[in-house]
Length: 136
Image 1 (spheres, rainbow, N blue to C red):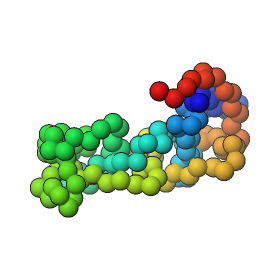
Image 2: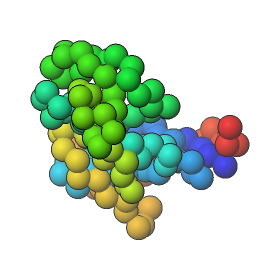
Image 3: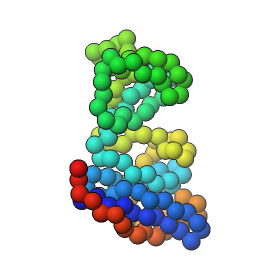
């Protein structure tokens, strides 16, 4: 079962995130921003032109033409050892490797306790659960 959790603080910070069997809530250890990630998204593609790494959501189609979101160069997607001419190399990770939207770092932690410090003032965020749904 999955659900939405609304995080809020007296300083004005508010964020709603998915959580449950299919989703994990992670906190950036650099800036304390919160994000919700689908536990099945453990794949990234790396642009060989600029080095930008992007989380792959959905199926990877090899030899498909794509443009890099950072540098705009067009090329194909492939595995480093099987498609050395590809612009994007696909990498599989044991943990989430996406960049934080706030500080652009890859420094995620999954707090063992359900207490998250506020990214704005460092007080403990209050949480309210809503919107329960089953896995699809």
